[in-house]
Image (cartoon, rainbow over all chains, first blue to last red; front, side):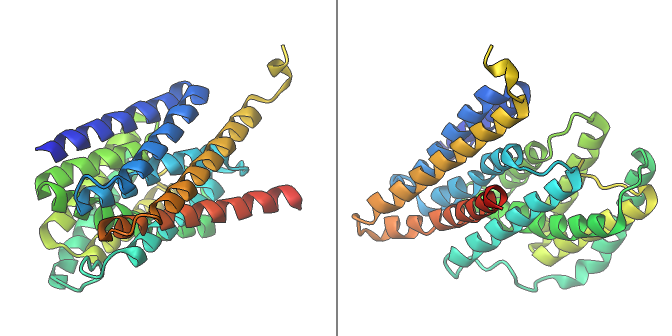
Length: 238
Length: 69
């Protein structure tokens, strides 16, 4: 029970720091850096068990990346997105390489459900593409974002955070917590886009919840984004 | 009056860079202090700081390249 309270506290702090960053950026930067320092301190503070420490270390990545976004020198949105997703991929790969060996991520289990994942992704992609407004983004850079974002998000949100919360409390709390974090990470001012993003995160999270295979989630994200791009010439993350 | 001459985004960027610098220094200090304690749990938890520190240093290389060139 103490872990659940701890998670709710961390979640509230994350919410406050993200809202502050949008509304009052100068105060928000202070709050966010204090938040990262607190999470790093809790990672080392040896009173909780190992799983809680692991989760704190993972969660410090989200406020850290939002500080990155502000301090970047790049003006164009597409290049900025490429940088963010590339650093998310690097961080999650590094975390995976420093983890103990019992937490295997890349195992080929229940791969027969791949067809379900494909159908699911194409249908959802077509519906979302018809629903959201159309625009004209360059093909090469969009393809790079699609590739980077699908792999890095599956690794970070499903492979690291959902696994950590499942080990800490229980799988259903893991699903709820991951979706809320997904919403934080992709916070936009456009409400229609936010609904689609949360539904998209929910589908990936449920796929991992049922079949525990990271490749299924990666393929779902990849195929959804490709279908969405070919229908609306747009990417979901703006 | 002074701040009205400065670009708002430029000030914000510098704030964020200072914040990331502070976080990096803090993380390095944590690593330094925990190296004294040899218990197994702390040694395992220390490993979790490395990814954050490595990404910070990558960011600093980018930042320096941007300013020095």
